[in-house]
Image 1 (tube, rainbow, N blue to C red):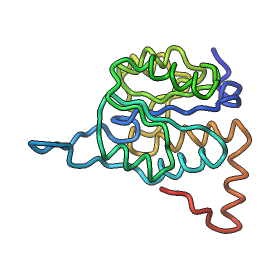
Image 2 (image 1 turned 90 degrees about the vertical axis):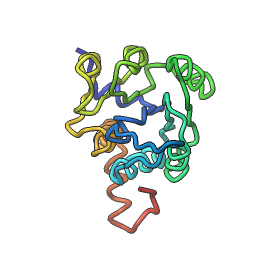
Image 3 (image 1 turned 180 degrees about the horizontal axis):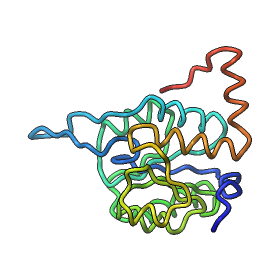
Image 4 (image 1 turned 30 degrees about the vertical axis):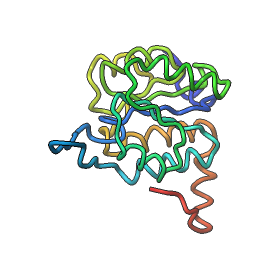
Length: 181
């Protein structure tokens, strides 16, 4: 079994799926477009804290949505790969762009289309309600469900392993930090 704390210590890139990870997986459509998605503020704070601690955060999703782009902007996520059919290729482009390795990468996914990436990265993570096949290949399975704090739990785990979480908490003991939620 992989030492997940040791794997988390070297993470420099956190890649997130959206539906079922950053959201509860519900997709609300009208006749023409996606109407809304529900995001968790605690997940957002975790992402903001991760970025503040120097983690690169990216989204790779099979959907194309202005809602996803807006949420990414709010949180400071600059890498948003949408309408991706084969997530390994999108991840390879990110790794090349930032000169990173798979071992320096954490990926959070919840369904079968995430398996090719989850089986390659240094830290494979999933929300509690991920499909069983995904949970079986993950190093870390959150206690929280997708869209309900799983991303926050995963970011805290990584930041704790890197020695950054106490710094974040101490900075808030002084005053607010302006992190987006």
